[in-house]
Length: 303
Image 1 (cartoon, rainbow, N blue to C red):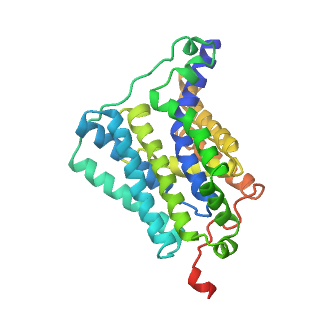
Image 2 (cartoon, rainbow, N blue to C red):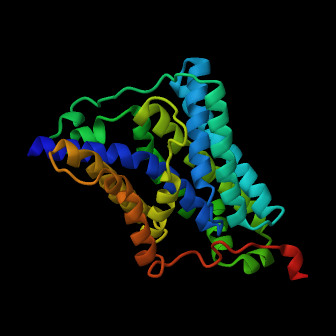
Image 3 (cartoon, one colour):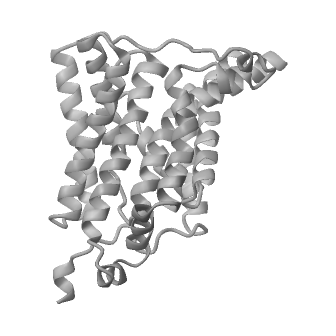
């Protein structure tokens, strides 16, 4: 029983980790009022960039860094099109998702490669803690980036002037302009930074969770990460809790057949996404989103 619980917790943490990276990046963007529908493309681009980088350099660490760069490139396009040319950010996001899916599929089909992934890095003594040891201290080492990344995002958003500007343009863009803040520049910066973190989520999925790149391997996880932000009512701890809930649903999908429970396979595959839909329906109306979320800003219209 204890072994089953330990295995379930380890699977939950492993599957929730890439969601947590993407959700943290999405949270930074949404705090600035920018809704990144392209989180799926950022994650998929990060997965491809990381796997190719690891294959080309022979170093998973360099691959991980390239994954962040690939995610940031998608964010750069999202930011320039949505918050410089002020195109509809939802249309831009969906277009980028389709573009990245098509591009990575084409490249992988024509230049197949096998990446070097990360193995488990067990922290001495801590990984031996009963029940939670493997889940918290027996993961591939990129998992431990969350231990510094989560407080780092909190510090950036709530203890720096830049974070104050981010939250300001997300709540009151027009008033922020009066104080001299360049709203769209701050949003572009938030989108690119968030995209780099989301790219790390894709890199983690490819190099730490799976071990290689596969076509459309994110399979909607970017959207699930967005749902986790809504689940968490745009707070860091709530967002992480949402990622754990979705990670547990995914882990349960994998564990039930092994435990002897025969359920419809299609239903099991759809379970995390059904949970995401339910979350959106329940929490979207209850949570307090940034007031300017998803609303474009054109400073020329103020004149």
